[in-house]
Image (cartoon, rainbow, N blue to C red; front, side, top):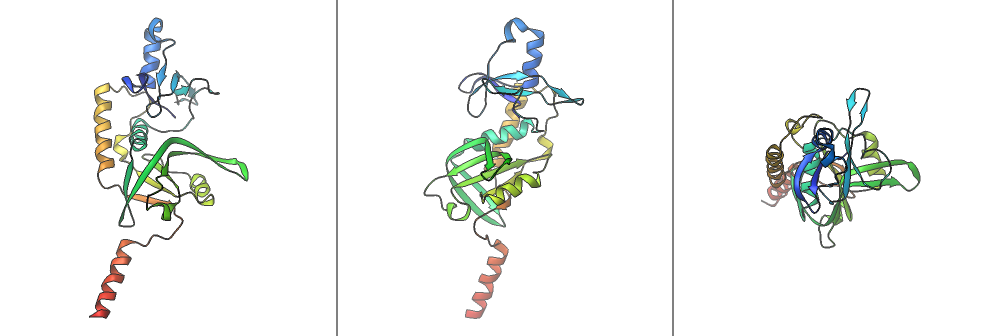
Length: 238
C-alpha cells in the first residue's frame, strides 16, 4: 500500500501523503486533477486513488498502467513505508540475531516483492523488502542468495506469510520498528514532520537492529550458548 510519493520524478519535489494529494485535487483540480506522482523507492509514476470500505479509509497511490484501483488494501503506515525506502537503499544490512551480529552485503533490493508458490498459485504474498545478497556475502551460507525482510509496527506478520517463506526455504526475518511512529490514516502531516520521521528512521537502522528469525537454511546457535561452550571448553583445558 503506497501512502507516500514525490511530486516530481527522480526523487525530486515534495514528499507528500496520498491524503494530501487527494486534498489538493479536491481544492484545486485545475492544477492537481491529473498530476503524476512518483514512487519513493523506484520513482515509478503513480496517481492517488480515493477508496473507503466499511467506513475505513484505505486510499493509496496506484501505479500508472497497472490494473486495479490502488496498490493493495493493507494497513501499512507512513513510517513503515519510509523504513522500507531506507532499507532498499542500503548496500549493507547489519542486524542482531540470537545475540550475534551479522552484516549482509547487498547487491540489490526490491520493495513489495512478489512471492508465489510454484506448486500452488493461490499461495502468494508480498514481501516488504527482498534483498539479493552479493556473491561475496558470508550470509549466503546461512540464508541463501536472497534475504526477505518483513517490517512490522502496529500489525504483526500473518502465519500464512511466514509459512510460505519457510515452505519455499527463503531466508527471512522480521524487524519491528517503534509503534509510536505510526501515523493514522488521513492525519495531516507536513513535509517538515516527514523529514523528521525520516531522520528518526535513519537513526534506527544505523543503530543495532534486533531481528526475529523466520527462516534460515542452517541453524544459528545463540551467542549465549556459544559463549557458555567456550567457557566450559576453556575450563576443561585448565
